[in-house]
Length: 246
Image (cartoon, rainbow, N blue to C red; front, side):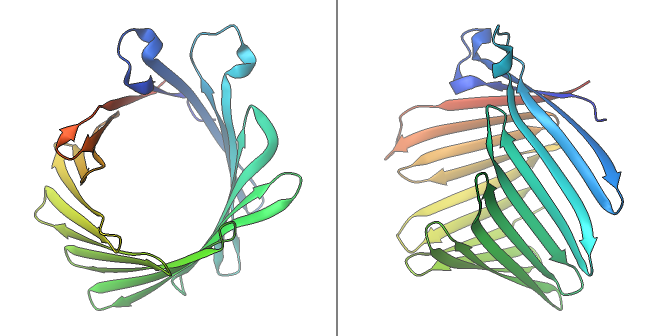
């Protein structure tokens, strides 16, 4: 069995007292049955409470196996407070054909597929192209993502019938990466990732929307969201997470 893992978040950006802390305890284990590798676990709140039944949050399990030339992984997530249905994800990959399929579904009184996508990769000299058509069965919306990577430059184009966007990611040097995104609606955002020691700071600016900062340093992760209106910052939401293994 794996060792329990404790993560501590700040709830709703509140630092006034210990009530602002939201500790979560995670436990997982693995086993095998024939050619199938199994992994399973549970997440629970570690906040003091007299209602013990309210502590479990999520129960999950994965199964991995090989079917012919395909590696197949299936995962199920259940809300521990409502076991009437489960979120299912199935991934199948064929490395020889550079092809993968991803499926999302829901299992309860019946089994229904929600989303499906496939990715085909093509390598050419020092560059790589991937094409990913996607379809949402609930909204009946389809789009395609075409990604191109060569050297220090990545380009990703997402297109549907009603909207298109392009993201260009450029590695400036060993410490800095800049990624502007332009959408057909006129929206624009710029992401800047900078390595700091063994961690990184990623800042995303979306005009007239928000400034988001994520700072990762070893076991610590801090997220800051600042809504903006024009040039005015209208608030701040802060989350701090610390992974503790024991």
